[in-house]
Image 1: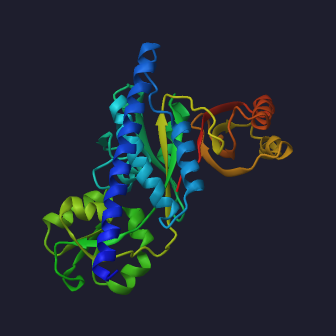
Image 2: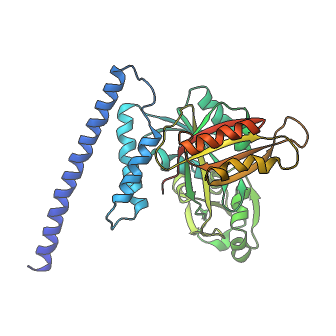
Image 3: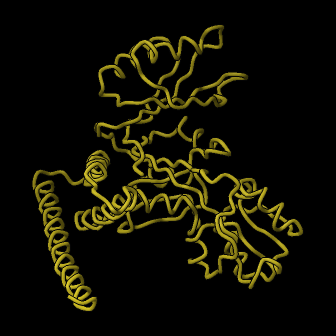
Length: 361
């Protein structure tokens, strides 16, 4: 068999596989419709989206992945299939910290897929209010960056908001120099969010020392300015470049290649265990010697790993603080339940912000 015949045979096999894939996706979509019909017949008009169920599917798919596609790519493909099938049941409205083209929008689409309705809002408290009012099913907000630390406004909102954490998303921060100019030499001003400017300071010092650096509300806003202003460039994502019609003059200018931002999915839903979960807590203790030690001791005694602790002013009195704590496990897990029971006896305030699946690649 010559090369031409080999190629023809492989292409014919690809055509067969494409039809099988299409048939399988269509059958899955019909099953999703049947699920919706059963839920509606039983009077279940809400919670078509099950975070723990989707997490379990993605975990199983990644574990069963034979290659050659990497796990992250396989998860992305199945996320879009699930997103499209869910939209047949009930399209989701997702609020996020805008404007369009931000990493928060990318995080929302990574978590929910592209078959959702997204709403860009101008501030984190607006995202919370939109979900609290029922205008959006879920919201997506940033909570911490691996190099720049926590987003204080997000943590502060949980002190007074009744919303729960329903999921988390981690997103690799890849920053690029975007402009309508033909080359870097023509750049006179660099616009970006202050964190983005900090995250690529070394690169800017070495490659654009003459350019004025101007902090704006978001990287997407920076891209919009760069589109409209001669001699301007933005530090932003490839999504922003596409959205605002800008050329990428330099790629991956962030100083820390592993720079990652974590986002939280907020909603009104209590999420069932997925098997690989985290729980977030808001805790306050009396301001006295050994109080923090007493706060953490139940976790150690019950073999529970604490992944993060962050203090914030309580706004109830001078030098009073609350602690945001992330632990491994779900509130339904017996060791976690026992530890939280003991913690509740010692703390002046214990608020369970949510148990939710760990972020999928």
